[in-house]
Image (cartoon, rainbow, N blue to C red; front, side):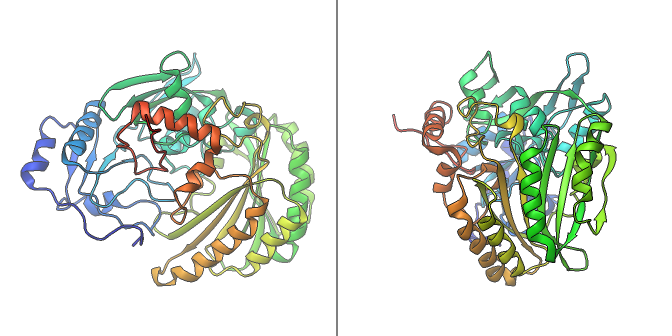
Length: 462
């Protein structure tokens, strides 16, 4: 159970819940319903919250009804798309979970190269629909992640160095605001709200559909290169050099983790979306370095690259997540990473470094609510374990590494804020200017802070 939540929770009478069921096209799931236990669970097994009910919406009208019900009953509201947030924001104790998973239809226009996706779609579903037409847009790196949460927080993914973040590919959003209005936000309509949706998280409403710009793409050169732990310092120094020279078509991640047998290893994870000959040329020195113990690089469908990490990040484990944008990857940072991973407390834990730059950095910091576009790397410290009684030592390991790297950081990716992050870290995720602008926007669209069970932005005082 996550210690931040009290164990008491709201109970609603059958008569009260039945008021919501009238005219509701989806399912209203109360704690006595057979689907309640599975429906309330989220990806992070550390989160164990019991909402008062789950409103599994099938339409925009259902979302409006669920919001109105929650407000009338004075209950907190959460929104579930993929349920993948590190902090488990899809569920609240005693609240109303607005579950969008039934609203997952994806309509692709191959002529216009756009796709309109329901707010409950996952990236795996989105990729299947768009790849049927040889098209793609920047998504996450685990296919079971929901499109909604990832996009609203910015959206790091394999295609970002060529096509920008997921939020950069967003061209329109349909939003149900706290007062029940349905708004269309785009560059031409509700443009202030559109700015805030691209990085500002779920603070401004329930996004019931996303329309993305698509790009031709069917195959990538990608996969995994595994090196022994004793070579990790050299691997990270090589990674620093390789990323400094990488073309936009190449996104390269690095990871410190353990093999299925529990042995510590380091890994390089490339994804090249250029022409096959160019990709082979650009990856040749990366594949030759070491040489690696294992080379699993191949020309694969883009959807396969997107799903490559799915088995490694299953739902249900205890997860404590800390993160930084790094200012660089100098030898001092590398020493900290290696020394702390040498002392890792769980073979399920990992450290992931994600290369930014390219198209991400070519969008101005004020053009969207995603602030740290000049950061060269994003770092995730992911402590994972299966036995809840072991939490203290695994959390201490993650915090220790996080604290050691703080002098080398410049902010945090809002989607990587975890269960142990204080509210003021939300301000850190945006910086003073962007946070102030978001607070003004919050005061306009959600002055009562109905959507507070988020990485919350407080409404500006009027």
